[in-house]
Every structure is written in structure tokens, then in C-alpha cells.
Length: 299
Image 1 (cartoon, one colour):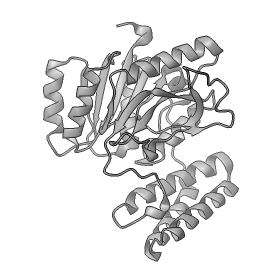
Image 2: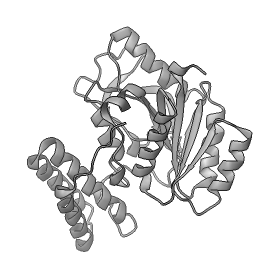
Image 3: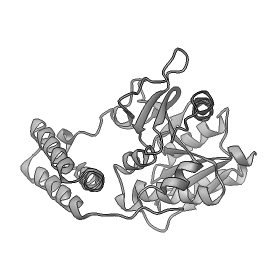
């Protein structure tokens, strides 16, 4: 293991042991295997702990970081990247417990980061995969956001588009970006933590979308984050998302950006026929976001 290329996989999990085992199987088949596989366990109540510990006995690269309570995906990624940083990792492959990377997925991200910098002289702040749903179509919730000149370096055989936002489903972050910009915001709990973080580190230089790195996201359905889809079952997630994005927009662009966001959310909910009580719950979450100022922890 070279200190300069030491790679840590950070997987956050909660009560999805069967899918998590598939993720660990996929990591064992990587052409570039992570030097550390850090499973961040959000106080699961199923058999996750026993299964991960059994795997760790057979594979010394696997580490089980069990948190004392469920602090959400945001808290888990914060804790995992922080722990991997303290272990000396130079690259952090961050992903979910239901996303299965193809054998060359991690290696392709690392190679793209290295090659892009060598060829252009610019350091991408992250590299992200093409995330597919279980039927091979593009996974709508995991589409990265391109910058205005996204095609600047795209060429045949190297279709690496510039992006400034990506999900925490197969994204590789170099150590320098964590050093300069800190950790994901733990207090977000869930939703928008990945968008905020990648946009924050992209201040140094955008990330790159690497389509030859492919991951399958095993979600129940293929839907993006659209407030037209708010229902009783998903309200709790959308409330976190509304609060968190409002907080981000207030911090970065002020009240005009918040108003534009609120107007867009209103249009989506009206187009989806979201019931009045649920709409009002989302508006209250946006209101809370105006005064929600979570701290950014530095390493």
C-alpha cells in the first residue's frame, strides 16, 4: 500500500444488511481495491454489526465504525470521512449501502483524477460515476450537475464533463479537498448534504463526471428529488431537504435565492397535487431553514 494512493471506501449503512453484503462483495472484486473499507453503522438494529464483524475477521481491510445513535446519512458521512482522514487516506470513495460498483468503478475514478490533472494542469475536486438504476437506465436521483462550460475538456475516449455537484453514491474525493474545505455538514441529518459538500469543494475547481465508472443503485424506484412527489411516507425526508437547501441558499446567495427556491417548490407541489397539510409542512421547513446555520467542521 502506497501512502500517496491510500484509498478508503466510506459506506454509511442503516438496517440494510443484505444489500450491504452485496456492496462488500463488489468491493472485494475491484481492480483497485480500497486499502480501507470503513463501514459506518448508524446504530443498526438488524444483524449488520455481526455480519460486518465476521467479514472483518476474514478481511483486515474492513473496519466497523458503529455509531452510538442514528445521526442520519449526513452524520454518517461526516463521521466516516473524518475517521478515514485520521487514518491517513489520500482518496475517499464515498457511497451508499445499496450501490454496487462494477469491478473497475473505483479504479476508473482514480485514473481519471490523475490523468485529468496531468493533461490539463487542473486538480478536480472530485470524480463521480455514472449511476444506473437496476434496469440499466440512468438513476435520476444521482445525476451530477454540469457547470456552464461542462464540455471544455470532453474528447473522444475521455468524456469527462465538468460538474459542480454530485450525490454521495460513488464519488471519489482527494485528501487536499477535505483539508481545504472541511467535512460534510453532520447537522443536515439527511438530504442535500452531498450537494452542499460537492458544491463547497468545487469552489477550488469543479469535479469530473466519469461515465466509464459505473455503479448500480438498488433503490425501490427510479425517481429524482421532486416536491411533486411529497406524500405522507416521504414527507420527513422532503422536510429535511427543504430546510437544508434553504439554509445553503441563504448562506451562499441570500434571500433572493431562497425566494426563487420557495417559488419552485410551490410550483412542483401544486403540479403534483400535494395535499394542503403536507404543503404547509414543507413551507414551515423552508422557514426554519432561514435561521438554520449549521457549522462546517474543519480537519
